[in-house]
Image (cartoon, rainbow, N blue to C red; front, side):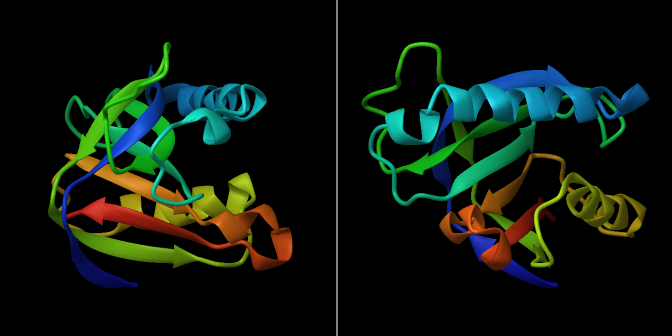
Length: 151
């Protein structure tokens, strides 16, 4: 775990409104991933910077317990082409707390990482937080994920 400063960047992808209340996000976010992958969106998004997939959390109504937007997409170097049915998201320049998750990408492991963040005393900004699923995560034995929390 460490802190870093990142410049602003853009994502293109799809989004949903959800909440952590009553397990709603545990239903909505996997469904968003299924839609994203079944439509082969990682290969449709133009002007990608790399093959990583970003799952961003934004538009928080207050904190992690209130409704928010989940945005799933890829980092791009241009918003000149946004495919029909997709959206763009500006991830603002910010300082981030970074949590590395390298034991695998099961829902339980990711959920445990988020529980640690939620129970921590981080001074969160609730602007845009995101997970980066690195290209090598397609190979389970090389799975790598980082969670970035705006602070």
